Amino acid sequence: MNDRPPSAASPPPAAPTAPAGRRLESGIGHAVQYVTFALAALGLFGCGVFLYRHGGYPVSFEHVKVFTGEPEDWRSLSGIVAFDQEQLSGRGLGQLAIALFLLIPVGRVAASAVLFRRQGYKLQVGMSVLVLALLVYSLVFAR
Image (cartoon, rainbow, N blue to C red; front, top):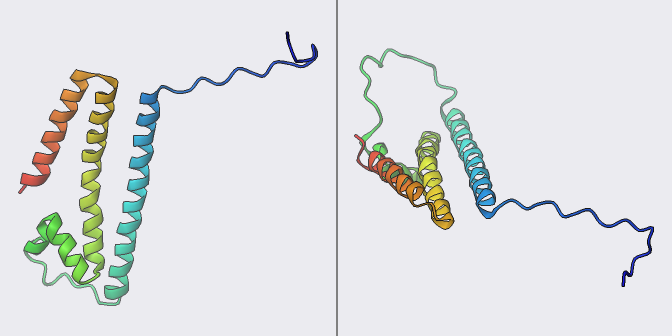
């Protein structure tokens, strides 16, 4: 027996939900966007601190005859983080943001590997793990 009066329209069918894999993929994409925006804000903050401290100095390129690069302490992520904790330098914050930007692809590939594993795609898991190994190797052993 129908409890509704004959004039009442039936509710519209529920919208189809995205498969779990699509939702996770979309979540990974949103996470990458948020992390990118946060790191961009950190880099801009570092630029602001640097300009606040050093913006009034006159610009001179007389001392720049040979490119020397960064100090030895600043050539690794642990050195950048340790130096920046001691003295909140704008240069250190900027370099930290850039170093963390390099880790975004690593996190994306690792999350994709987990997503492929959940979906049961063995070949994609293997390819993702291979790409992840190459990324980690290039970041750890690069000179």
